[in-house]
Each structure stands twice: as C-alpha cells, then as structure tokens.
Length: 299
Image (tube, rainbow, N blue to C red; front, side, top):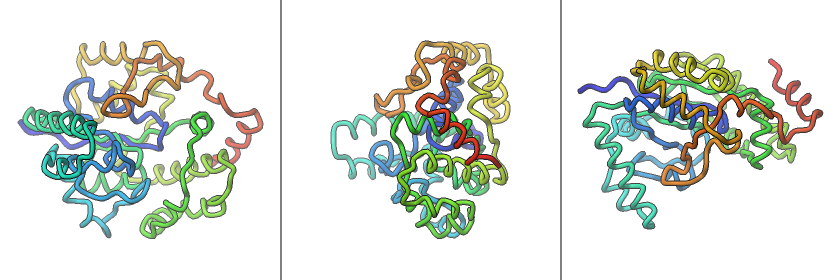
C-alpha cells in the first residue's frame, strides 16, 4: 500500500497543534509524531525519530542547510524508525518505553501504508521548506493574539529572542524577526509574546504552499472544521471519524485542561469542550494588557 504525502501541523506553541494533530489521526490514516524538532528531552533528542541534532528552539531549515536535515527528516516522514541509534542514546527505562511506543507505531504504520503526521510548533518558521522539499501537506494553526498571549502568561512561558536572532539564515529569509531585537532583553513578557505573534503572523501570511487555519474557527465548529481539513489533507472522513471528533471535542474541562503533560508523548490529549475553550480567552491579562496586545499585533 502506498502512503500519501506526509502531514505537518504547526503554528506557535499554544495555538492548538496537538489537538488538531490528534483529530487528524482519528481516522487511523496517519501516525502521530510528536515534536521531533523540540530541542528538549523529551520529546526531542530522540535519534530513533529524528537522526539530527536540534540546537535551537524554532530551528530554521532551508535549502542552504538542508544537507544536515533532509536525510534525517526523509526517514522520519517515511516512518523509518532508527532502533540502533535510539538504543545507543537511551538513558532510562522511560527512554526504552518511548522507543517501544514510537518504534512500534512507525513500523506498523509504514507496513499499513499510513502517513506520518508531524505535530511540531518548532517547525513553524520552516514551513515553506517542509512543503517544498519534503512534500508535506502543511496546516498552520493561528490563535487570536489576545488568547495566545494570555495562554503564555498563564503558563509563565517565554522564548529567548536570541535563539531566533542568532540564526543568520532565519533572519535573512524572515526579516520580520528583526523587529524582535529591541525586546530581546526586555522583562515585558506581554510585549514579547505579542511581538512574536505579530512576526509569525506576517511570515505565515506570505508563506507559499501552506494552509493557515485559525484555532477559533475549529473550536467553534470542530466537526465542520475538521471535515474540511480532512478533505484538504486527503484523509478519509467517515461517520466513525465524525463520531470520534465529536466525542473528543465535547468533553469536560476548561481551556487549560485540554491537554496534560503526561504519558509517553508528553502531550496526551484529553476530551474537552472546544466551544467552552473559547470562553475566558483573555484570562490572565488585565483590560489594559488586552488593549495593548491588540495595538501591538495590529497589521
């Protein structure tokens, strides 16, 4: 059986990539691969999944450095798991359990003709390369900027702009990132998150060969939204898939409880009411913060 093109679901972290990726595997036509470009361990630094060394968050991949990445990512999207490399890097029983999980999923998926689905927010700035060189069908999630910044604030997240600005090829191809420079050492996490959202939004808007989808449109009507995504990706939509998606998107739990850092994947999905997840989007921000985020992210 011949598999179709691999899939990449990307977007800034906290934009709904894990949820979307899980829903796109509800039809059993794709194998979920969690964040191979995450520089942390886990889920990154897994040579069985990706035989390449990730050194930066939002590691930039383009034709100028493709010799370092193309062979490894071709193995990943072909679901060729490197057991020997993973065994040599194993450090704990957890690593062994994860090797068995992913090794089995890759092998069975390849034999069944399934497609690789990479859920990787850290690939968002390299989305054009994934589409052009790996032939990926790319879906990029974008969340409303107030909801995005509020989510990062609630979790206490930030990102070092030095990791972005210190990649010359990335800045060359995405000069929008230069506007992050004045905020590189700023303690203003709201302004930093808003600036990252704005730069990424502008980059995605001009990136060829990808589909940009808003988190809010999917959450408001998940069955219709995912039916359209299945069609775009060439995945089979069926009554069984519709039931699975409907059940998964109408469960209990608030917006921050939709996913939990547990299990082997570290992003285990839990049922959530996706419409309820839209309420309280600005929680964690003051009214003044909301006004400022709107101003900072305006086109």
